[in-house]
Length: 216
Image 1 (spheres, rainbow, N blue to C red):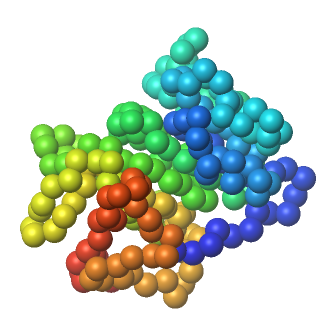
Image 2 (tube, helix red, strand yellow):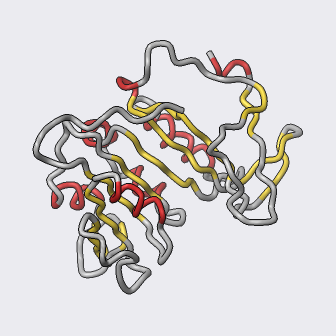
């Protein structure tokens, strides 16, 4: 995993859009303390978790495919906050399985033009009849972004495939492809990063195995 490039020096702060918020959202607070303008979007909680932080704005709406009193599209969020495409903007998305429909309806090139990094919690990753449909979404995403960190969330449904423990809940951090260092190399075998930690106290982390052909 690589540290994000510094924001472009200008008068406008980079923006971190956080889709899916809870009363405890440490990522949002950390980004705000780093100088990012954080826009929190969630219709399931009553108020902002950190109302005292001047860098955080909360919108009580769900992400959807329309704009009304309860829903807002990601495209509308991006227009409303006037994203500076030269800044290191970041998208964080944990919207309980709604990420797939959101991505299916998105122009991936718009995401590429607006965000340097994106963090997704992908739900429903267990094999089923819609797996191929979700693979198509990921293939489109991979045209413009490359995964730089992957983690199995132990809150998901655990299962075994090809002799490996897997989870239906997968966390992935993406970096825009043009920002990937030229000397970056994939990994193979069982791999852990120092930032990996269990999602639930008392449950062990699930190791990741990267086949050699994926590391090229």
